[in-house]
Length: 131
Length: 352
Image (cartoon, rainbow over the protein chains, first blue to last red):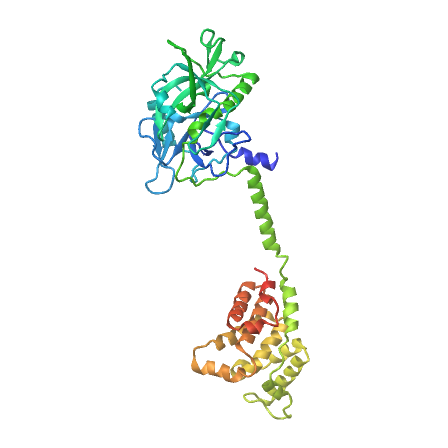
């Protein structure tokens, strides 16, 4: 196994894991992650049984919406700073591509067990059992 | 805005044709090879003053469908049978919706997430998720984290950084542009032998049977012989002879200094360091009598800088380049002229 393969296998994709997702997912030659586009935190909300797809929920410290479809939790160590994950903006993401990103946001790689339960509760309130 | 104009017209269960291009919130233009057809599953909502809907892409590649697709055989909607990709549901800005193609009423289909997929089905899913990235990009452009501190590096950059760090560590350990301690001493010790001062040379020409002040006749003879050996460059012998004279420090600092140098050049490093540290301590003593003694006895022949310089060499001999560097820096800042005939001495000293 080459060194490259070892590095590639390090990130663990699981429900509740937090990723630095680029604000631009467009991946053709004309707009591939242009410098300055930036990143936002994204949580793996669900893993599909096809094993190639994760459902990612984007988040931000900016308060876009307040309501039952926002999962608000503490990730940043900064005082009075919370992250808001916008459940209604969840979207499919290929696991292969997700592994190329950083599994880390403010040093946090995954939600705690308590946070995971709160996430699932919020998803149920927002989406019912549709998912 | 287009979005607001459309918002009253967009409802769930409607089929829409999307645009091929759009400008995102940052003014960047995005284009797709062709339009997409989508099925609206969530009526417009707002984000960051923009409206979005949740949609499921539609495809006519019905042969790749699974139980998680909604299969519409009725050709009256689009002119062909199609599938609604429930597994590829995503948000898009309503701005992207171009033309309503129809709606499906009374759609009540339970989809099941399959546990097995054929290779073709997986390949189809992969390509569809990539193809529809154009749609969800419209929403992603709007998500900005004000505390965006994390930057993802591609693996090539990670490896380049690792390689640079490894090379840097090797370079620091190796220090190829520095002298080894042995080379350093060979260069700077031999270039700067400390000649006997005038006062001390006088002891060499004194007559037999005349003792040096503060010493017995025998001790005076030993000191005279030691000074001769020092003058001849036989430091091993002078070091041995000086060591036979007790309490040299308290009787004659001038001679004590040459005894210390004899130790240094004879590689009696520990003794040289002890003697030179004692002199260095004396030279910066605040005690009036001791400092005056140092000035009185050494001022004309040996300077404070001489003591610091040879103590630095003794430290290098002992492998203690950190303390050596501190002393040389002290000389460099206090008396830069002193190091003029010792070219690049600080530059040639290893970091550790």
